[in-house]
Image (tube, rainbow over all chains, first blue to last red; front, side):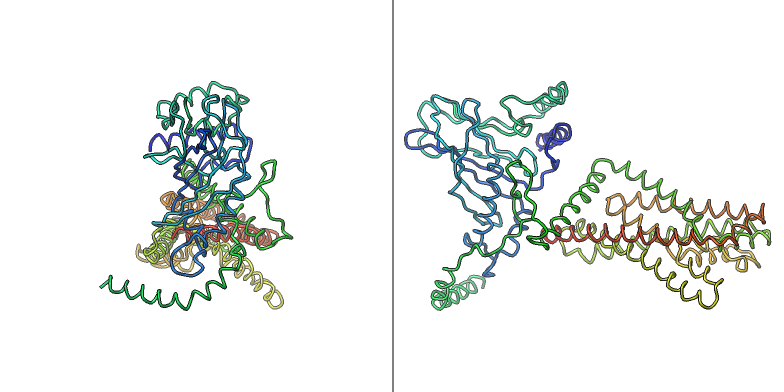
Length: 220
Length: 343
């Protein structure tokens, strides 16, 4: 927890110093995430599955008035209009998903596989963010990060089984999830950033939010 | 018991199902997309290619536009409050205390304190400056305590009334905003009411209106009427006089307390109120002292017909009232939506 709080502090400081967009320094929605790297039958990477479980406050706000038949439950059909609108607006943010092949940011395809499920008083949005062109992990190093650069939404991986593989993972390859940065690492980043000028930019044309997002990669 | 109930319910559902199926089949054909999803429910607002958020234009949907604007204002307002709350509560507290002190000083010396000056002068003729000062001090402190008591009780009542609600803090915040709005309306009301009377009185006896115009000011009878001070001098009498004067809490003090509560620094509000009382006391004492040492000056101050000062006070109260009522209303509205969403 301390690590996360520190992370927020660093983030907030970064936003204040560097932000070019009108940023809101505090997250307003919290998401607990699980993801999958999706492989085709030929062992190519097709895209990623995201499963976002929202915090209670957002859930309550979003669900208000959607129980149309009044049975106290929120069926998929009742959630559908909200899901559709959310997917439509998330598209303008590329679903907060950045996929790279050999460091090069990849274009994403049309998101068609999505839905929302309400169970145990938790609202979960699941969607598949496909790559426009599948990637062969053996020839190109695949990495991806999911984060909101404006930090309006705090997206964090769940502690247990944060990332999985769906489909055929080539035998010589394995899934690598970069661990949550420790306090010491965050301090290091902070110190590093404090020595840089205001026009300094992270590598790979990444934004600052990406520096603090957990990276997932396929290593072959 | 429960299981039986559930089984019965299930039966009812199954039975109902037989009748519902044809009806459902009909409604199922209807597009569900017709349900309009409130934009505030979205995780992120849609935006243009350049990254700027798409705002609804006034002409498309005036109601939504107004709410969007309101949300934006509320967001920045409450964001600022929260910022103060978390980042610099001490700075905010000190600012509040200093402002309150200044308010206390200037408020008591404010426009239309002819009454105060006259009574101070009357006091002086009776050569009882010391007593006047004591009573001024007591009444200032009592006034502060009454304000603190009033607001504390009010907030406690609100808190206990909402104890069923989970988010008492959120409820208190909403209540504070509502009270701030109400204070603004009260200010407007006090500014308008005597003005109406003023006009009314103008037709008949032109010179009496001055007493009416400023009756609503707090800190008015800060130096007690000479008549009351004369005669036997006892501590009980001093207290009862001071109490009679101070029982009406000052609107400024109430506002400061409510604001402090909204900021989550109620203790600073209490301190500010007491400091405000000291400020008021100082000014009133100085006026009384001036009266003693310079009757002429006091006379001049008392008799001056500061009409423009009246108008300035009127304008300040109307303007301030509008601003405070607007802010309070906006904050209340926004916080209401949020706390309702939470509970």
